[in-house]
Length: 191
Length: 100
Image (cartoon, rainbow over all chains, first blue to last red; front, side, top):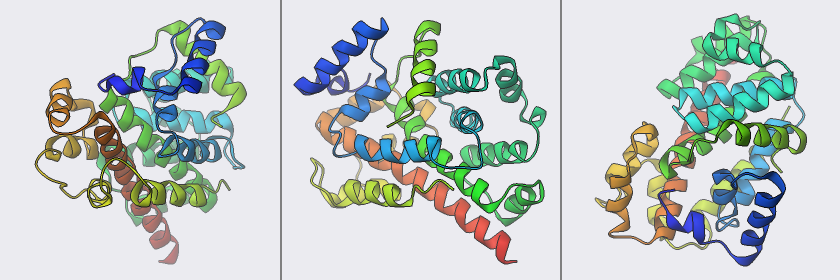
């Protein structure tokens, strides 16, 4: 990573945790965990609360839908690391990798109202601009206000982490690490 | 409905008002997308928009004049700030659509 402190600057407790993770998983510690554990009281603890609520809190969207949203937001933000991880989690939760691959290749293959929500998130990520007309289209497609707010919560959480992944230069995980991370996030969430 | 508001506001308050390595005025400038000064201009502009284009040289440049903790905090404030602007803009658009 581009800051040495994120690889080597953690306290004893975090270093111990990283050792346990490496031993238990057989994979390197995720750079996401390293960022969240570095001066965690400044940033990581609160972002974990936000992300857990957005991704696993009560919602009319399924967990798989929200993981797919996270992958779409990550793609719009050009975050290769997060696309790899969250397409993996979505595929795991849906138990359908082909469905996720198809949705990522062409959002219009997805049923409404998720389709319109994915297109909205894509526009927000790429253009940093959506307007009332965009929202009317999503509402007309059948999404409720609560569903749109929940989708925007996903976009907020990943709008932060995508930028950090690119800025700090997170190493792209190999297939084994993606699978292990997907299994963990599917089972345990973000808390 | 998922409710991120309390945690989102707590995060913003911590980033902008809590104790940190970087003075609060600079953190707030980074968060709000204003230029905190020439040392930070190039990196933070990229953080607001095209983060995929951030380079090792961008980091070397800021580390020449700031500690790693300073850089960590400013990067996080800039990232959280842009995500906040996008989120609030989208919520305002949703309100506008419903109030027409």
